[in-house]
Structures are given as structure tokens and as C-alpha cells.
Image (cartoon, rainbow, N blue to C red; front, top):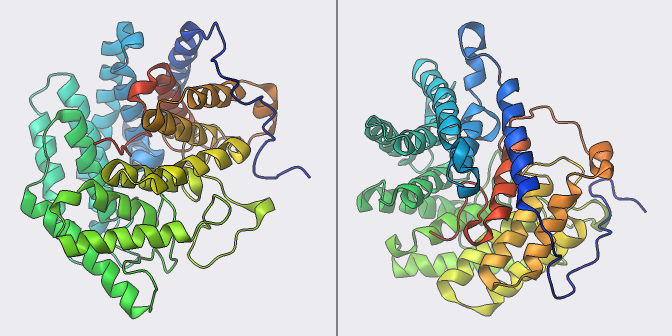
Length: 413
């Protein structure tokens, strides 16, 4: 029976060696032409088109600016570096103007990472720093100011802790800046305050709802488990700031990670706590399911070196190989590139060339007539998460797998 969510994977699996003649030139050419196509389709930034600068990193022009910054850092694209950075500045300047003139409808969402101001200021600082512009310090200052918004335990009614708009996202943005700029963005006091708010929020919710997990969270009333809005990315961010946690709180985090591992159903996780997965209709996405939850267990393995966490990542990769050729498109949130990033993650964790092979096959599938004819039409070609900007990031990382990482979601910091 044909799946409505994924294409059948008809590729032979890894046989012990990578195919000869993998041509970087073809990938570089596609990346360059796709970037040009994206920039040609960017809406006007002046006058009535200024609203196009909204949408944050997820679907807005700030995500395109991040993609251009990522492309500018790739040695194989060095001849276009300055062109990409100038284009990135033009886009991110419009996004910063939008934030400062219009802002978010809800003032409390200004600290949002993927859907608001925190992500915009973070990427603006990266672009300005890459161009050698002194004003990047002002942008970092604006980013730091947003930390005060995250401090109250319940600063958002919808849920204060998840990745897109909550505290985990703000910490993730700070982690990106630390990685790319080589310096901590927040003071130890600020980091501990935000981590403590996440911990307190999770404890309070778990007690109130009588959950078997010591830390639990909800977003718009749903107890999500996946990377987009759920428990896994919140725990991943707490692990990313592990040294700032008290020993008792570190233990609560590990207990929660092991609880989440116990929710596994045939190498996958349901979108929300307590659901039973329907095998013929399961979600195998970065946003909901194994391809996103894998990053938590990767981080857990990198910190603890316990093999059960790596084994869980490997099982995530096996399911993704079977069911990761998604029909929703080429993107990283719920598309083929997001699936393929799991293989690049596993390559960096294990050094096994099997995962390079698998990532290459998924990249190859993006160019087939089967994919072009059978995948969902894109509503937003330039979206970092749903469109081709994220696909460009993946193909660039396939060219440099030793540095590959899912955009804005590193476990290697």
C-alpha cells in the first residue's frame, strides 16, 4: 500500500564504499542557481511590501539571510561570498526595521527565536560581523535586552518554554551566536535565570497534571514531544547549558530524557504524550518524530558517552532511511532535507561513511521526476524551514560533512 506521507525508498543501501565520481561541481552549480532563483522571487522590501520582512527565521526573509550567511562561509562558494553577504544585509536590515517599527503583535513574543525578534537580531549580528561592520555590537545589545522578557515563569499564555517562541528558543539563539562568534552572549546570571525558569515551569506543570515525568510542558494545551514545540528540544537546550544547572536539576533532566526514551514506539515517537502511533500514518519529521528527537539523544550521548543514547540515534536513522523521503517537500522542517540531516548528524557522531551515502541518496532523490511530480507544491519557496533555503543549507553541508549541522540547532557547541 502506497504511503500518503512518504515515497518508497528504492535505493540500495550502503555496500561498503561510496560511489565514485560524486561531483561537487554539480551541487555547487545547483546551489548557486537556486540562491539566484530565491533572490529573484523575494518580494519588494519598500512601501507596501515591507510586511514581507516579517515571519521571522521560519518562513520570513530573515531565514533567507541566514542561508546566504551560511553559503558565504562555504569555501566552495568563495567567489560569491561578498555578493551573498551584501544580499543578506539588505534582507536582514529590512527584517530589523520591521521588528523595530512594527514588532510582534504580542510584545511577549519579541523574544521568539524562529518566529520573532530574537532570531532576527541574532542573524543580523552574524551578517554584520561577517561584513566587518561595527554596528553588530548594537544588534547583540538588542538581542541581550530580550532576555528580560523570558524571565517570568509564565511569560506566555500559550506555553513559555518551547523552541519557536519560548525560552528554549531564546537559549538556542544565544547558542548559535556563541558558536559562530566565539563568545558567550549572556551572563552566567542571565543563563541560570532562564534555565531555572524552564526547570520551574516544567516541575510545576508535571506536578499540577500529575505526570510521571519530572519535567513536562505544553504548548497551546498540547504536550508535544518533538523538536518543534515539545519536550525534546527543551531538554536539549537544558543539556546545552548543562554546567549552569545544579546537580539535583541535572538529575531531573536525565530522568526526563530517559522517560522520553521510554516513549519510543518502533523507533519513533508520537507528536504528543500518550498517543499511539498508527504505522501507516506516522509522522517521521524533524518537527514531530524521530528525525528531530534524534538531536536530543545525540546531545545526551555527547555529554554522557552512554551507548544507549547513541543507539537511540541510530534507530532514528534507520527509520528515517525507511520513511524519510517525505512528500511534503524539500525542506528541513517536514521535508527530505530535514530527514537527510539525520544522516549527517550520525556521520559526525560515528564517522561511518554509510551515513554520507544515505545523505547523498536523499539529495539525489530531490532531483528525480518522481519527487518533483509527487511532492506537495511549495507555498513559500524561500522559507528556511519549508522551502528551498533550508535545502540549500543541507546541500552545502553535504559538501562539507565534517562541519554539517541542522540549521540553527547544533548539538556540537
